[in-house]
Figure 1 (cartoon, rainbow, N blue to C red):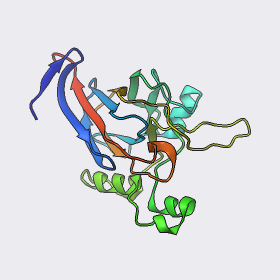
Figure 2: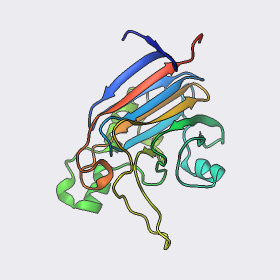
Figure 3: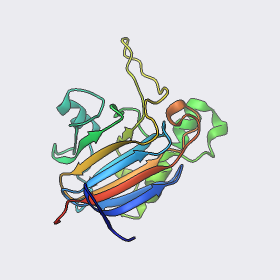
Length: 212
């Protein structure tokens, strides 16, 4: 792919991730990853690892504990289980993203929606297939971020997956604090409102600062 230059720096990867598909990339320290919701109301499941030691990986519990809240937005730092920063949200035009809803799987689909959903594709399968390209397997999957997914917490402590608050063209921009490997599953879920029951494409753009 030909690189281009924008005000944000030199674009090294600019990919449209089709509905239900997976995507991955190594993002160098200081570079930016922009995930754009092209059509609105599309959940993007996300995992991040140290590029050279994948045992150092995103930890939902450390991230939530450090920031004192369960939702991610501008200023949130994605921490590893060693409490080291992996990526920082530097821009967010949506306003809130989920840390606790997890990734859909064939098993969770059958439990929640019935055995007839067993054959449906799911984010866990996306993560396994894309992660295998980088030497990852089932043991390397951890609780993930869900960009654009709306999982509110009610006063009684219950939670639900409800209609998203995203819209076409909204984006989240993350800065890599070290060289990282990122995995993205453009969620294929059609049984709850996280994708408006109609999965659509996302855009993933990696840009490096000028002079890098």
